[in-house]
Length: 222
Image 1: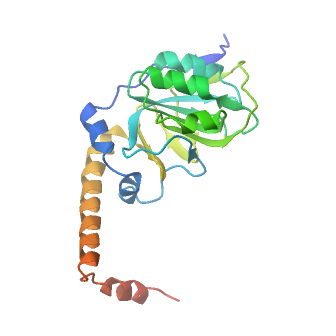
Image 2 (image 1 turned 120 degrees about the horizontal axis):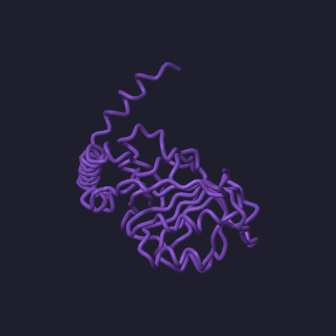
Image 3 (image 1 turned 30 degrees about the vertical axis):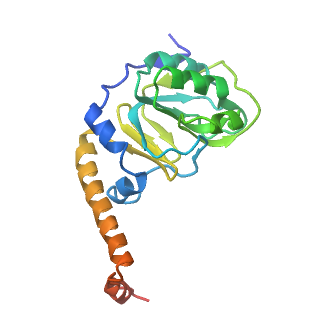
């Protein structure tokens, strides 16, 4: 029998140790250790900038553009610390959420919302720390007719997110990290940050060796 919303259980949450570690690492350092070819394109942060990185286990949903019935039902699948990831097909004709629903998900402990679609009440959202990422803005409100799917693989901003992936985000953008890969990526990202800190120290002390530029230019074929 056809159902308006296909529902699947939420994946096991990532360990707190991984989440806490990721909150202290910029997305750019993580991206540098994921081949620099993954992550979202075209989604923007609309919340007040924060020092810490958003990080949480993905609860995913797919909905018809501009419809938030599935969003309302997906709230039953979200736990404190999760990130709600919404594939609304990039549609900008009607907002999926606004100030009220973004306030509610923050109040129940969700760590952030990622929406490949439109939002509204941006002035209100910008005053809050709760992370909201979206493709665009419109004043036109949502429909509530369905259909939709909860906890299925989705695509947001060109990035595939599976239920249970760890989603991280800051002012630079968003990444989805499989839980099985997270510990290794964290270790490599920390090494990247230490290398960058050493570069800054070398610049301040006038000892930055730019010989690598010759090597880079030498390998060019043109």
